Image (cartoon, rainbow, N blue to C red; front, side):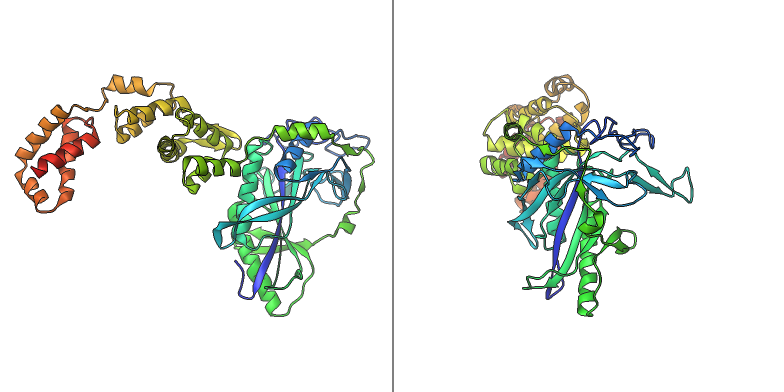
Amino acid sequence: MSAPGYEAVIGLEVHAQLLTKTKQFCGCPTTFGAEPNTNVCPVCLGLPGALPVLNHESVAMAVRTALALGCTIRERSIFARKNYFYPDLPKGYQISQYDLPFSEHGSLEIAAEGDPSVTRRVGITRVHLEEDAGKNLHGVAEVPGKSVIDLNRSGVPLMEIVGEPDLRGPAEAVDYLKRLRDILVALEVNDGNLEEGSFRCDVNISVRRKGSAAYGTRVEIKNVNSFRHVHRAIEHETARLVDLAESGQTFKQHTRQWDDESGRTVFLREKEGSDDYRYFPDPDLPPLVIDERWVGELRASIPELPAARRERLVRELKLPAKDAEVLTGHPKIGDYFEKVLQARPGDAAWAKRAANFVMTEVLADTRVHGLSIELPVTAAQLVELLSLVDAQTISGKQAKEVFAAIKGTAQSPEAYVGDKGMAQVSDAVAIEAICRALITANPKQVAAWKAGKKGIIGFFVGAVMKETKGSANPALLNEILERLLAE
């Protein structure tokens, strides 16, 4: 969304912590939530004489990500020192990649701004490796009125995904982030947890008149850690920059911060250029050489990605696109749904019934935290439950009752139905006898039905269900009632 006559030009720099057990250049654990300043050592504290050693697993995770995004992998790349001074950076520099990153030239398909049915390709400049900084904490309860530093995060493996300035509005930016996060979670290289800061982004934004090829002066909005905040920050900053352009005001490139409470961005500092960081190759780290055969092995290990899985579910099983998106939003939910589909491969009707039940019942009781997931019933239990409905042993309504009773247990749905005597009554003679008795006892309702008030049939359905304790086969019951009332 942009003001009339102007368009926003947006590029995102996404920082994703890699799910390694140890840090990027030392053996310290990466556990989130540990006691402050306990996951540290001379290397990540930047003590004199401590030497870094590259984490092999972080390289594998980053290469798999770059391949999934269509990047070209460079055989030889270099780690550099990015020099700046900030309280949470104990070495006085960050080890990163700049002139020679290990990958470049990728892309990601997103939904176009203003028309989600249209997709377009957004460029990715590069994926590179670096280390995270520590964390400044302000106003903590233990030290009121002061700022403190937790260096547990210092040195955690970080993957930066630098996007081209191809986005044109907040909806595109959010869709880009969601699709990117889905890929990282599917690859199991990042937990996608925005709240804990393991997936966050910097928003680079400028505005220009529509039709112009020149870029405006760029503003960076630092460390935005929710989709909602990204959307609101871009809306606000677009309007602010357009107002400045309309009034003829100029400004220097700078960094801002999003304040969600006030709904505006706040000036932080003037933006450093690459020269200000005084990049130079890290003398303690040799060049990173990535073997072509190893790249082939990593490429072969990439699973079916969310977009491809969604497209397959829509194409082969005729699921609505929105359903497919919900069912593939987390890799373990997608795997769970696939196990249910295996009970009747290629059966579109079964897939739709299963999708509806998973989305309305199962996901309502599913707990997700990063890559971990806690499902209320197993895929085998769900297959058994839905098969009971298909066999007309129980009704759809009864299936929800059985689900509520067995969730969190290993109990068999079929055994539960048998123990509780829930099996549907499908004896046409028995149901017809009950219906005839009710019709005889309720002449006013019969007359109303004959007068055109067809909705009155619900009265008879409810009465029969009460008589049979909800076990009458609904389809058979409605068929018998329609026939008897028409006599």
